[in-house]
Length: 125
Image (cartoon, rainbow, N blue to C red; front, side, top):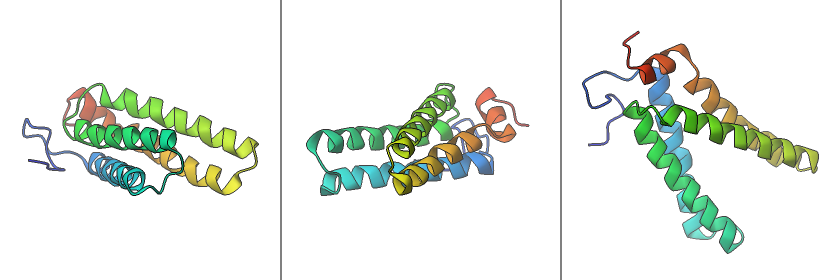
């Protein structure tokens, strides 16, 4: 069952984890839908968008289940998103750069919150 509340061991996920999982599901689902609907230009880019969307859906579940690999994976993807946004900013695509910078920063902030770090460590605090 797909629940936003527990890690499978009966622990209730903190609100920051629930928010992160919801954002990952929404982002992943939109990415998958856009790539399937042809709203992403180019076959190569659509394929990458589809794979990233699926990865975000898998990460959402891993976050809920407190999988230890989920937190560093989100941090690496967030860093990649920031680098991409900075590149877009340098090349003059200001609107895309600012829009693309928001989500990686939000993901990184949520996964680094004290409650999130405790969740991944397995403590209840």
